[in-house]
Amino acid sequence: MRVLLDTNIILDALLQREPFVRDAKALFEAIESQRVIGYVTATTLTDIFYIVRKNKGAEIGKQEVATLLAGMQVCTVNRAILEAAVSSNMSDFEDAVQLACAMADNLDAIVTRDTEGFTGTSLPVLSAGELMERLS
Image 1 (cartoon, one colour):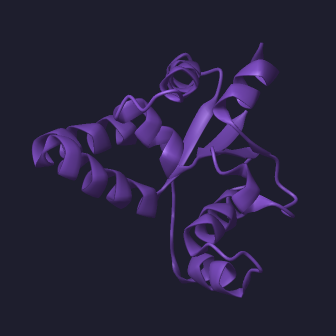
Image 2 (cartoon, helix red, strand yellow):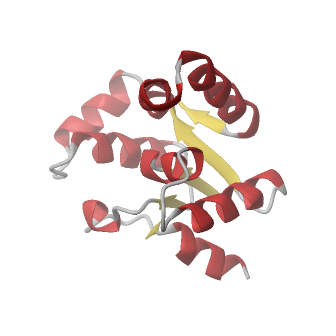
Image 3 (cartoon, helix red, strand yellow):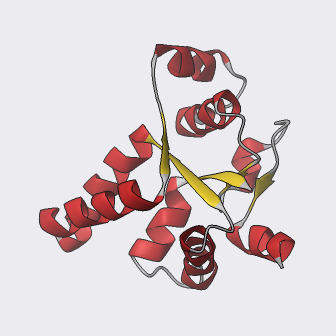
């Protein structure tokens, strides 16, 4: 299964955010074992660096981005993606970019804690726990 990980899922794992860290880490284990192919948008990586740098320092931020690059596929964010996001009916632009990337790359689902932010989309939107249940 090919899934796009929303920023919040990645941060749950990296920053050990309770009570979400367990499901997020289980998802990363599924990616490491190649039961899931994980995707991330290019813009998510810049957000991850910024947030981790503020919490743990720039060197740790770079290490975490390097780790994500080694284990995940990266969805391109270009003009076509941004135009699709702007023209969508979604109120959250970041979510619209995530959806446009997932659709452009023909992914199977988006994994997020903000499933309500993606209501009305044709693509399945799952929590990390829901995805793990589907895999078992």
